[in-house]
Length: 158
Ligand SMILES: CC(C)(COP(=O)(O)OP(=O)(O)OC[C@H]1O[C@@H](n2cnc3c(N)ncnc32)[C@H](O)[C@@H]1OP(=O)(O)O)[C@@H](O)C(=O)NCCC(=O)NCCS
Image 1 (spheres, rainbow, N blue to C red):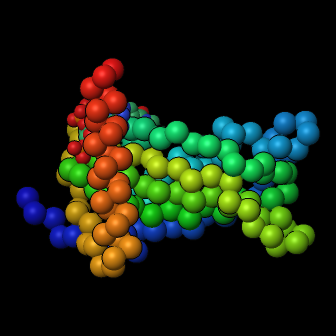
Image 2 (image 1 turned 135 degrees about the vertical axis):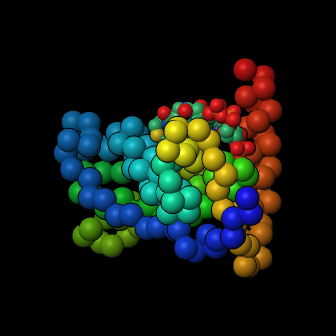
């Protein structure tokens, strides 16, 4: 079946979440696991917007925590599809922390999440290809393809 291509702009998302004391250690540093949870959530949202079916996280590439996020900050996650294969989609997420008093934003993480589309029987299913409208879309897609090939190699190693 040939599915009509869809632009990454159709599914991209910005998610803003306020960080509270239960998200952090006693010194007020937000847990890495909380940030990973938000990354996973927004990747699920974008992939489901694209695929219009249930999607599950297959892998999250190495995530570095570049700067601390503190209680009271707003976590701003900008996510978009960069690459699509058959059933898998790569979502790029850029995470910033906003200090609500000064308005200053700091880049805290960039993450790549691979999400797989499942049909109603829980089997992997084909998703629409990407409509690459800009040079930037094409560059992201080519880079995503290289990362996907690297993941396949790493999985083969076991
Ligand atoms: C992800 C999952 C569906 C893959 O199933 P599978 O039987 O291994 O499927 P396949 O080997 O046929 O691979 C299907 C696709 O997933 C991709 N894939 C599988 N494992 C992957 C991984 N670890 N990282 C990246 N991509 C992966 C394959 O490259 C393939 O992509 P393509 O269809 O675009 O070519 C399965 O491993 C699973 O259900 N995992 C648990 C998911 C989960 O519970 N996530 C947390 C809750 S959301």
